[in-house]
Length: 415
Picture (cartoon, rainbow, N blue to C red):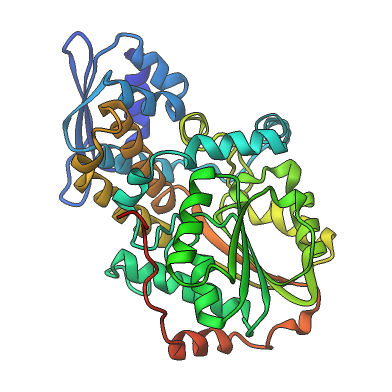
């Protein structure tokens, strides 16, 4: 505990943390303030202080999952908020040559998302019980960052605003052919078809998503115009007027960025428009969080713009618009976590308490990464021809102001 104690005394500037070790000794770090977290934890294992000192990004989450870290005062959200606020004060601003080389090597080892591995990674996360996702997502089953016109917006309204924002950037025209790469549970594809009378092909690697998305398209009356396929983007053929990808690029892997953007260019019509919506890093390239990579998103990676834009340029695509959404995902995750905890009793027969703690930690840690850890969401609008979109962004706001919202899409087709 001695080395961990020394570290925490240098680390903690904001809030107060009280640690009780396995011998019931109490250590207090920082000062309590009205606007700062005040958290007390018990470390039940004598090995845990060493593990937390050696690799907190992995072992903090594991300790909360298995119960060897117990919260006596505050919640796991409070603990992670405390960590996030103080980490932001210690964030490195420079990376040496050796660290940059190590990051590139590590990316190659952990993000080689071949066709087989990509399918396995998706199944690990997205083929969980449908009831789990219905317990915390909005009525349209949007599992990506919402668009908050106000921090007080309700989740359903913010997700509707996100779909409208994307539709505006796509500049849809009647009877166009649209591709949705990573179509999830189908809400965006169905929404676009109903808004603009377009034909949409959605692709996913999740069998569970494919089934529900197809059911929802039929229930919404657009089954003829919206088709979903269990298919990897690398195997696609054809030509599309519009391409959209929301929350999928994080699963591509750095080694496959050239393949991804080359495929978009190949599939996009000469006057076509594509929009890629992805989580991004404000702090440059990294290696990601070990706990998230092990338990939640194997093969996942948060890209930096500095990694993405050179690949886009080399692909022959033109960047026609970039928008950065700050804190929108933090607000999304806050409401997801609150809904998950509020609805736990309805799904506890499916999963044990360890799973509950894992999912709570995932949602809380992800929120803190957006509040304090340098994560954001980026929306890239791409084209082959720079004249494919208007000269100014006024068309986006005009669309959002005048576009009538479609009726809600059925969430589940079960009786």
